[in-house]
Length: 190
Image (cartoon, rainbow, N blue to C red; front, top):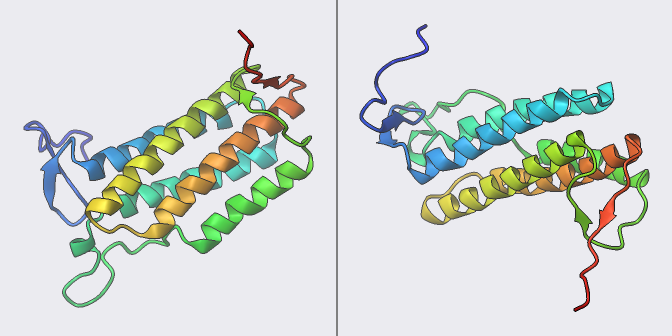
């Protein structure tokens, strides 16, 4: 399989099922942001963090690949004429969302109560979590907009929403694990 196909040289690309769209299509933007998010999560996973967190991040990366495939499949191409599902892979679903919630709850048990907004930073690994969180929120916003135009699986939006919460909590957990002081945002009085 060659890495280049030359089929995108005119500014179009194929969705799953063969439909060709412009590369700036909202569906492409949505799963492109999920792909960017996945890359940042890989960057977090490459840091000096616990194997348990690395394992959770690898699971999330796999889920994001699935989520990207779901976004790359337009509703009219989800099933074949025979009624069989075209995208024959496990989908992001309630169990995927529950995994994130359980991971958030486990990390949250170890963290001090949050009393202020937290400024991103303090350590490279923590900063990568905040960047990934921001990319996740952008992917979520684009998916919501896409859903307004053509229905997508609602679990995609739920998953991205929960994943941004996970990434915020992970930033706090890594701050604790790496003995980094969280910088509280306290507006300056003028």
